[in-house]
Image (cartoon, rainbow, N blue to C red; front, side, top):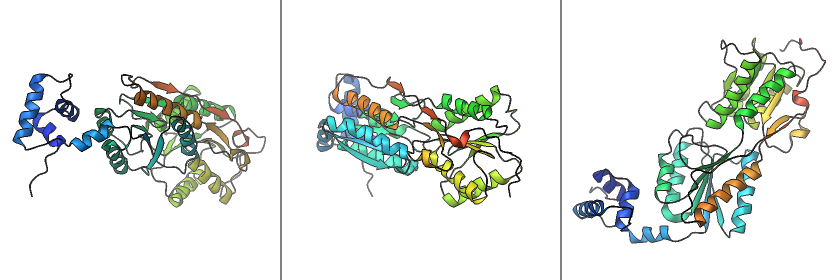
Amino acid sequence: MKKKINIKTLAAELNLSVATISKAFKDSHEISKATKERVLAMASTLNYTPNPYASSLRKRKSNTIAVILPEVADNFFSLAINGIQAVAEKKGYHVLIYLSHEKFDIEKTIVDDCNSGRVDGVLISITKETKTAEHIQKLQDENIPVVFFDREFEGFKTARVVTNDYECGYLAAKHLIEKGCKKPAFFSISSSLPICIKRADGFKAGLIESGLYSHKKDPIVYFTDFNQEETFNQIKKLVTGKDRPDGVVASVEKLAVILYLVCHEKNIKIPEEIKVIAFSTVDTAPIFNPSLSTITQSAFEIGKAASEILFKGIEKKNYDITNEYVVIPSTFFERKSSQQTSASKEKKIK
């Protein structure tokens, strides 16, 4: 079968970027005459003809933006979507919601689809599997603005809206120590996501400063799968074992919910035997039994700010959004799950 020739093939043959090839066909002033002649000559040799329809699609406004999320079950993303939608509606834009389900291959396919002229800009919160930003670079090569929110890809130059994760991890550790914890642990869903790394690093820094971490035992516990039964069993083993923690900071609310279920089954008292704090925006935290202490992100504001930056990139032709960096601080709500009690902590856990 004859190999299909496309703009990527042409770029590879000439050792040029796809963006350079595209600009050469458009007779852009950014491309030298010599390079344009090389591109046209190779196109003739390979019998490649630019697709005028695809080109016209990219020139037209779709009045649509894409929002790429790892999930929507997390309350944070639901609130962030509301913030994004509030800005988009005022601008007369539609919002396409895509779910990557924490899979990089799905995320890459979605991003590639966004590069077809379907959307004018992209808001993205990456998956825990994402180790490269090459697919996102292709959007920028086609002048499609991109903004990271909540979960970012570090080292990639584009706009981002995040929260103060390191500081929050540190303050959570210090809070548990102040409440009497001697063996606090941090439950995390990923050892590679920047947002989780920053929270865990801040937590560890708080322990080191207080003299509770000697590097002999890592206080960070990773859960790589959201299979609830598997995670339930792993947490149960941790909190009933010999080195069980007396305090936990959960990087996401799901882990806190599972910890509560384990404690209920094993009759482990919160906060008498184990104190709990969760990074969470769940609005039912005050009615947990006991009420759940949370580090709460301003999800609506994060979504709103990310959307506002994206529209600067869409509406202002020569505006460079890549240096936009916004940090919206989270808020700590102390509730009963992390409070100090006078009850004995010596009860044997079965």
